[in-house]
Picture 1 (spheres, rainbow, N blue to C red):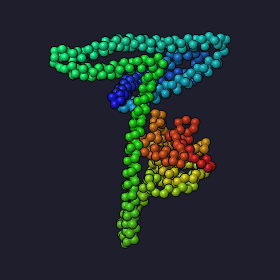
Picture 2: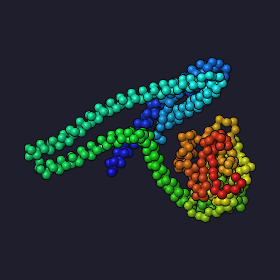
Picture 3: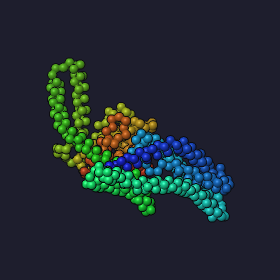
Length: 476
């Protein structure tokens, strides 16, 4: 069982390396072709934007045929399923993927434009147009089938020869490994007992090797016969294995983090009280103007540190947690007060709708406030990366759901599924990947939930849109 587990782990690593090489090679080989294809689609879309460019039906039909060929080319340039862990080529992959998405979007627009243009022609024989389009698409599919079938036949031929060679070698292996034992016995160089023990050991080893050699072949062939996608299944298994291993590591790290915060928290609270008493004593003494200014700076710094520490209080495992009614205005004022200086410094417009001000929910302030602090803090970081002239963060309500929206660059589509996992962060500085995870966990305790909105028509602003579904919320 241990050997099988090690073998499976090695196979997963081998498959991951193979897929990483495939993706890297495909990107290096096809990037320029994909860029040219995307540009060609753009030129065609511009051409179709003017209906006067196609006055003859045959011109339009010929263009439709050419588009079908380009569609086949685009499909051949697609990377297909890719492993979650791409290592150093992740940035190149995302650029390539964005090119492909852009090309597909343009192709969809082009096809819609062609269909609309065809409808403007008065045609007596619609069937002949559809038949011509059918033949064009069939020809492209047949060419693709020929390409894959020829490649498949060559691989099958090579693999058949290799299979026969493996069979010949395994047939000879037991004899080659054990002939010396019989020879030693015949020449009286060993005992019968020792010979039989060696033969039995060699037999057991050979039996295992035969099973390990042939079983994967048979299983793979049977899976192909049952039309099971082995590659997709294997990549999915690798991704799931990677995710689960990472999750175990993250949970252990979080447990250590929680214990550390709990222990240090008691010490910091003691230091905080000591500093506060010291400041109060100093303020009651006779100080000159310079000393008063210095004490004022110390007092402000201490107050800021105390506010930040109070913000961390929901992370504590112990202590009473009080529930209260919270309005949208309470939440907005709290967040605005917390970040006011930083908003001014970074020229960020922080606002909320009147609908948000009117909401009301009953929960622990120590649980709800940090959620909004985390979300707004994330937005504050990313709106500074925006190319927009204004930097905007907005709290709003839509369809009974609470939104924290910004006009920053938003979240990459490939990262959406990872957003709320612990220690996941794309920040180049200061990112620890804990905030969003804690947001989700804090909300879940009270039956609330949070997700990232990807649908354009459901977004408040064009950047990141985090949506909270509060259980029992009123006036939403």
